[in-house]
Length: 186
Image 1 (cartoon, rainbow, N blue to C red):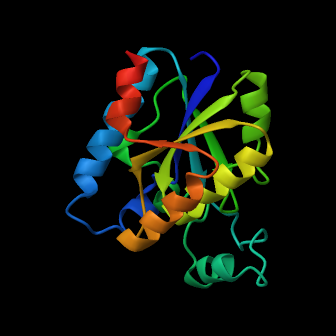
Image 2: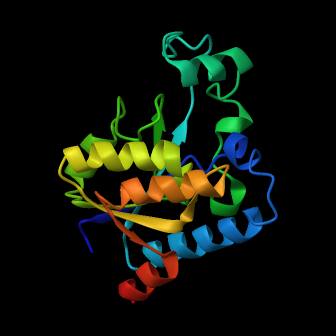
């Protein structure tokens, strides 16, 4: 397991608050328990958040999704919307990566960190399944990482979108429930 890292992607205030679901607390509680289990056995826990510089110089108007973010003005560095949610806040020794695109690997120093730590397996959780999770899996597979996706620690705004994304993800990653993954750790 020394070559495994847990990625906690986009679990930040500005994204969690959009969920507006009664299951949000349960989701955050399961994620917190999973993070603690990973820490307990010494796995690297890496948080990935999305944040932009003031003025959004990295958000091209040709990119439809980033143009929407730019138009609404959210997720600017230093804004509370970019802070990791308090229920799963990083602790000393955890790593924080800032991204400016959907994939956690595109244009970030995440691959450099993973290679420096000799990580070969990525265990991925995040919001949303069809966004950061799928994009990171697709890119991570091309970069030869072994991939595990914690299906109950990914979420999308619509259940059918989540389910469809997991079908695609399962072609390149092992998809498991967090309790089953934790059981394997012990």
